[in-house]
Length: 89
Image: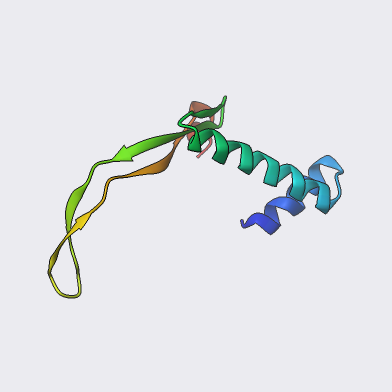
């Protein structure tokens, strides 16, 4: 399922127009992104938790040349499925 499919599903289930469904989904995604950027976490009970994790700097290897390279530390988004979602799968 891509974003377009999700918009269609939300519009069909809620009676919203596709434009309204798109705005709602964009608003949700923007709120999650802003919270994560601020270092917070977003918990949707029954669905899961979005959080930010730090990856330490490390050495890697260029697969083409075999040369050792340094990979910088960075922050990455994480998602942990909630109990109800995990049981559904």
